[in-house]
Image (cartoon, rainbow, N blue to C red; front, side, top):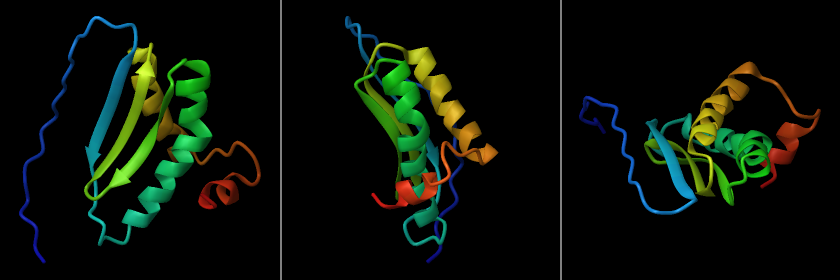
Length: 116
């Protein structure tokens, strides 16, 4: 099946509301569920969520929750009930750097993450 190539453009939205907490998300186009890398991205999103983003967004940043996910065609980061927009967006960038570096939090991090 051939998919039509579409030009992707960056868009940013900000909706200001009178509240002290926020909902933050960042999305990137990726592969569909039939692609061989789809499962790898799902495992990566779980590892990012549990080994990096939970600590940075919830424990350090004070958000109620957050993480990463992979849907068909979209990789996304999110946080909710979050008092720190800028720190959270930086944490999203940090998660990519963390994953790219190959650092581990413990010797059995991978085993812990894939048993979700």
